[in-house]
Image 1: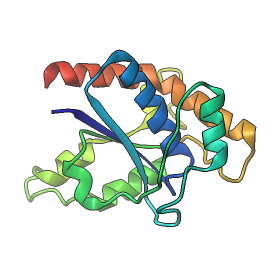
Image 2: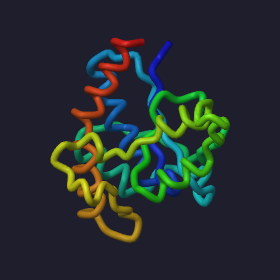
Image 3: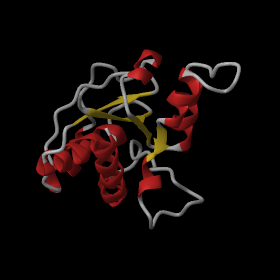
Image 4: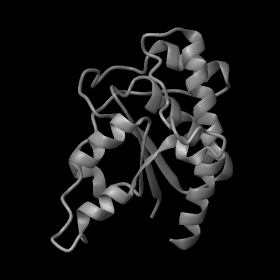
Length: 169
């Protein structure tokens, strides 16, 4: 069975689809058995394409892009091995959606919460005091390029984590 990764941001049109397509590129290049997708914590853009500036940043860097925005559903916790939030607010929202832990702290809720990670945790050079990937939506091309730079910086560490999980699995 494939290892499954999803990226989560606010509206699923900027940061999370960018991270999705960068990881897709790398897992396809390495031939890893990994399913990658993305979603948002909110429903504002459900059914929309990725922001044109996201698509342009990906294309300039040599990545592909095809995307329809969707909202993360609490029923999906069992579906994914790794749920990657793009900022602390997304991580909080995901933890709030996760099933509650059992009375002894065990159970589905604990396991679900352990799947939630911040993308920049995988970047050893990231400032541990600020692991948020900034929202480029109200910015310009340089803001989208910065997000892409931060996404790419996290990929080696994320790929190491995925490779290790695939070996264990």
